[in-house]
Image (cartoon, rainbow, N blue to C red; front, side):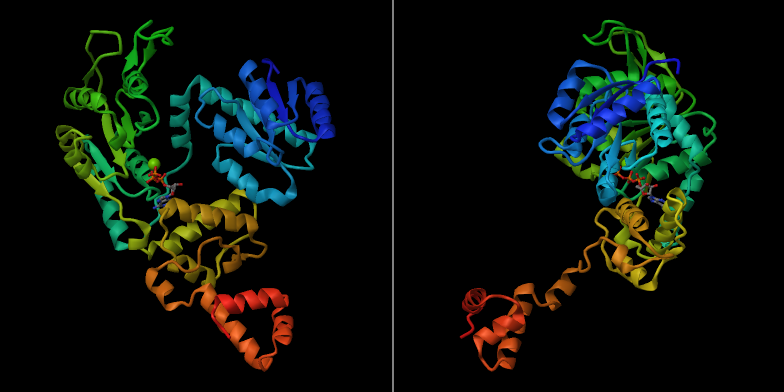
Length: 446
Ligand SMILES: Nc1ncnc2c1ncn2[C@@H]1O[C@H](COP(=O)(O)OP(=O)(O)OP(=O)(O)O)[C@@H](O)[C@H]1O
Ligand SMILES: [Mg+2]
């Protein structure tokens, strides 16, 4: 190991902490330990760590609590979650909160060392060159745009037609409908696919930070700018820039963005020299931009400039024929990733997936399938593996009796069977007489 890798072990079990420290130190890591979340946060403020091995279930501030605090910290160590067998679901939750990987106890030492090294490598890449790494990820993962509905086939044909041009594209769709995937696909089919596709989330940073991320800054232009830095647009020269959540762009920056789109010209923060680059812009939003223009939070001229090609992705509930193909695509993806021999979904499971409204769209479907693949013990995913609300549409709800009504009916039936004998009825119902009495009063049964 050429560089020292600093590891923080957070676990409330003392023997476990001691063991990990001993084993990892022997392998050349520098290890600190913390017995609970508070102590961990204290250490994180004082020292630099590359990797945290984090127990999820702890008294006080638990693992998820720590992850939530670290989530938006770009200098956060890479998190590997330690979990008992019983908490696979918690591990899934942890991955969603930004954990890099998880390790279930009991673990093998070899496996532990591999994971810590991999996590370190991951962190090093993302800190050292976030932009280029993003590009790498995109190049490695082939674009798989799955669809069968006529609505999405129309979207796909629009993508193919417009990809080779250099026009700006505006992608609109609810959260989780696949806007980023569409941006990727456009880039993939464009003449610029040998140059990077670089993404900037316009909602993630303050106005000053986005401006300096986007256009770069000169040394000393603001307090933390200790060296000159290229902006994203310079890195993306000859390539494609993906402006995600464009609707959240602060107004001040919108003017500069418009000038850039019109002329390819920009200035670094703290400089008065004009620079020019050749960048294609793809923007995405889940907001109604026309509405934003009306309320004055989005510039009308910028809207028209971006909206040269408009791709509207319909929500999943409006193209339900895509559900089975998407589900099977995700089943295969996660079955392969988790090395489980799962082939697909049972017809009952597919019915359930198709009946649901998917407010979180394709992302929600993907999450549900991922969980199902983890939970599934057979070769097909069944309804019992799916964690989705069974009844969703309002009409279904109106036809269905409420829980209270069902309970009242049931109590009445049992009472009739028991010929009005309350102690007999409470026996059959499995509740004590007092509870039965209270329920009868509540439902007005005499
Ligand atoms: N047609 C599709 N085929 C295959 N995978 C899809 C499709 N649509 C969406 N996905 C997958 O669903 C997930 C969510 O998609 P994506 O991140 O592109 O959505 P988004 O619209 O950008 O969401 P948000 O508004 O929350 O940023 C991704 O993992 C993506 O790969
Ligand atoms: Mg997105």
